[in-house]
Length: 92
Image 1: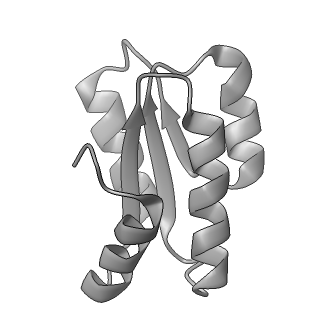
Image 2: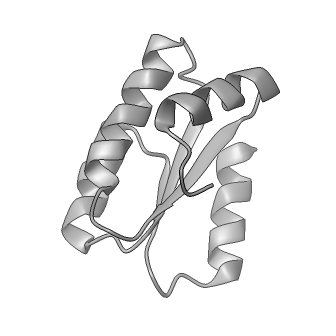
């Protein structure tokens, strides 16, 4: 939901034994929160959890996100079939 914190999301991921976290950003905060998520996952020894980010991500930031360890970045205009295929591939 809109008001979940990264800490709460990571805790829910741990409790549910989820394979991935998917978040969408619309306001330019994607780099800040991606770092936060990656640090929290590392702290909780959850490096096996994949972080998938979507939203209004400038092309220049996509490579930076991937260098941080984000498994996939989806920008506006990504076709549903492409998104689903990539997520299925990441989780297989």
